[in-house]
Image (cartoon, rainbow, N blue to C red; front, side, top):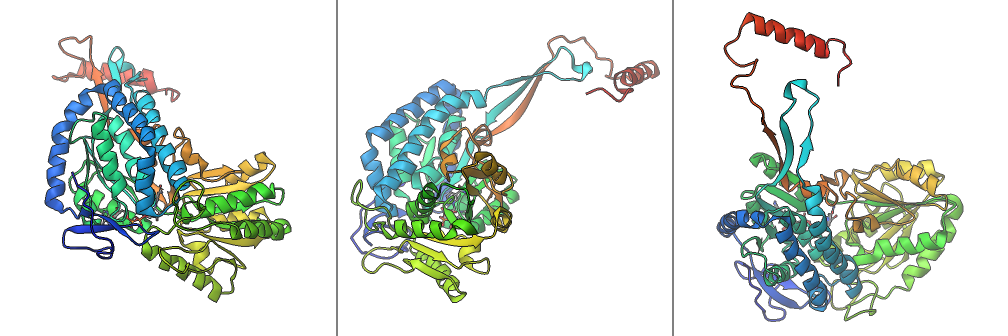
Length: 514
Ligand code: NAD
């Protein structure tokens, strides 16, 4: 298990002494800890340990494993201030962003998987339509793959890194989590939590390190769950293919929001501001671009602009201090800056914000842009920052066409007082999830699958598929009543073969048998 060592403030940038990674608070610039950059040998040793203890964890059954998960649920709530403080210090996000999207998600996920794993993974009794098999017992079983590797991004260290470990554990697997090198501390705290809650040692381990540590992990595990950028996701898919292990990929997005002319503009404006600026826009399902029907464009833009201008930004020192926090990953600031500069150079107008904030910490001002189009990166590539480009469209048809004009297909939203029309538009958007008069909230419904279309991912989390992916299907057939020799067994005889031929003709000769 990696240990966290405190290091001197300002002792370096993102690359520290050999074998160590400094962790920085992006809201203050302080180095708050260092963690080991683990190599392939350490990952292999972890894998051996994880495999050795997995059978005993599986043997505990759903009830035994569920007890540990429910203890962890309580632990998370009892220790929430410590967890929030850890998340805030390594991401620079606000207290509220950590509480709403991380603590509440983690606590609900522990309960959800403890309760639903037995249902989703229960043996299924199967009946075959094949008459030859009459009397045989047939079962579809989901058995754990064994050792699962989870690789996570920096934007939600609890929800998007650790969160995917919960169903993998509930299914009876051992898990090794490789958190982002930018935000490893929350994962280490989660390991401490699980140990205190009685998880057998070695069932959950954290491999801290850079991309190479993630690459080494893929070489050791039976299944890989990856959340991160589309570019890295492609590399992970190739590495998994080389080993012929399954992978599940949750990747980038460029979520559109469509405002139809009959929308409740006050709600739509509040939603556009919140879902684009929440977590400083560093959410895979952030609203990244908005299309507004011409008759309501000016009013919508006016509302959004005044709301964004009122947002307080800075170092979150507790509940209610600021609405918008820091950019977690410093190079992300350059990307946001370059998207804004590209848009402005092609004719976009910045109505609020538009630049880095002066002073300590990594902050980009909440930004609203208009006069944008699809020649601009801000409308076509994932920005992952607190920016909101708003484009005027003639009608819903143009909005749908532009929403679908993207290599991504993660989430989307539609606003209309006519909810049936809103749903009809939603069904035409090429995205894994679409909300009507809302955005992003589908993530909180753990019963619904969450996964991307197009280059936004492969597979999904949540729902039955979100835990079955950590298992292998096994078919079991038990022949309870068995003669010494079945008709089709050796030796072959003309008489029996002809009899079987007649039987098949009776069974299937009419062309109407299922
Ligand atoms: P990233 O792809 O740079 O890194 C993700 C993880 O992959 C990190 O832990 C990194 O160390 C590791 N990694 C890097 N190279 C690797 C390799 N060759 N093999 C194995 N692992 C490797 O992503 P990021 O910048 O940390 O996260 C931001 C991205 O994540 C955004 O694109 C965002 O949309 C996406 N994201 C998607 C979801 C989702 O559910 N779809 C959720 C959160 C974030």
